[in-house]
Image (tube, rainbow, N blue to C red; front, top):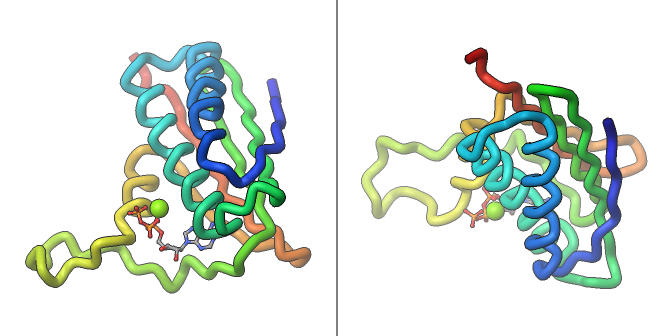
Length: 139
Ligand SMILES: Nc1ncnc2c1ncn2[C@@H]1O[C@H](COP(=O)(O)OP(=O)(O)OP(=O)(O)O)[C@@H](O)[C@H]1O
Ligand SMILES: [Mg+2]
């Protein structure tokens, strides 16, 4: 199954995106804990998309695509905003003392831990795509 949505770059859409992720996660058979993980991951990427990628400009939009089957959900966020090169991002140094840790940058680290797969690519047309996938753990 596949659903696609276009949203304006306004953080007020995050509530609706949370509802969509919850409904879809439930339809795919995920439990509440797994749905919370999915919601957190989607909300983190969409927040970055809205604030960093599209600079909170509600005249610009991004696309959310959700594909799912029983026990599996895959989410794509497509956006053509500010250029962004994630290989420049290092994993946060969790061993560093608190003063030495960057205040920012934990979001992407979190993403990799919430989902089974998370990757990012930039198309030749400049469209940036985040893809994330979660599989239900075998009972
Ligand atoms: N879609 C995007 N477009 C452009 N830049 C981005 C995008 N997503 C992330 N970034 C850049 O990567 C940095 C790290 O993102 P990350 O989510 O880890 O931290 P953050 O958003 O700054 O802080 P927070 O911990 O509150 O999420 C951002 O500060 C931003 O510069
Ligand atoms: Mg962020």
